[in-house]
Image 1 (tube, rainbow over the protein chains, first blue to last red):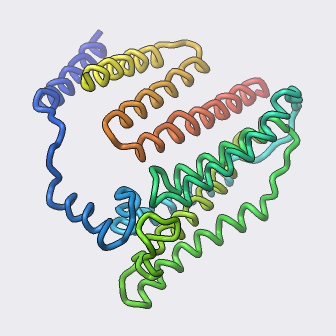
Image 2 (tube, chains in turn yellow, blue):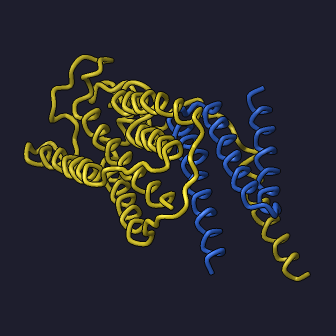
Image 3 (cartoon, one colour):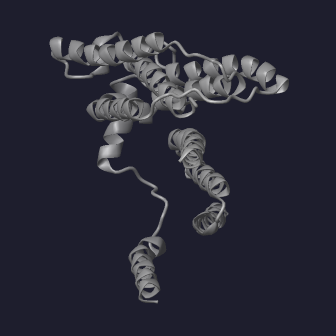
Length: 223
Length: 82
């Protein structure tokens, strides 16, 4: 009984905190000073169509590097804790096998499109990486005896992580700043090869996230 | 109009959250919590942030649900072995 009263009080307290925010809620009509700088700088300074991508990769590039590191540590932890065991396996149906072998290629291509066009269209390395991992999940569900080549996966993962840091360090050597995307010529606005190093960095992030999540799914669904 | 849609989606999300907590069937609870993420991604899309909507739909509704399903499968197998 007392427990329920406390829960009700907690919910009421949260409600009373959020009520003034909800009443005063209004869609922002004007950008704040910082946002104006980002929107202007993304077009004039970095030549990137997608403002979100230029904030994530360049203005807050160090945070993204930290995020990728956190994901790497999570993958390493899961790999240590979960051992792959061999058990009884159910064979997938003919329909699933045929369709997934066709669909997975299309999904991988779409994932590569998402992360290589991160500076032009919504999306980027993380979303594209998850899509690639979901294509491998489809393959794992359809073919139960699928053995992923872990050497290649680790090779892709560690190399793309290392190159991400190297691209950041090149900026430091050229004294523009760590992870600054102006180390490569900016190109023409709206083209695939524009916005400096942003597509390069996002491709590394996409490959790294894709191989890491494939590893996680393989370790978890292995038995 | 837009705020009405958002409020309706938000109410559905709250109801789905309560259902997910009270469901006895864990498999159904995982599916319902995946649906909450999908509704949240629709709200992000309406509010004009397609990047966040994509992340929420792919990671929240897709990957997290699958990881939970795998974990549930593993936990059930451990229970049977003991």
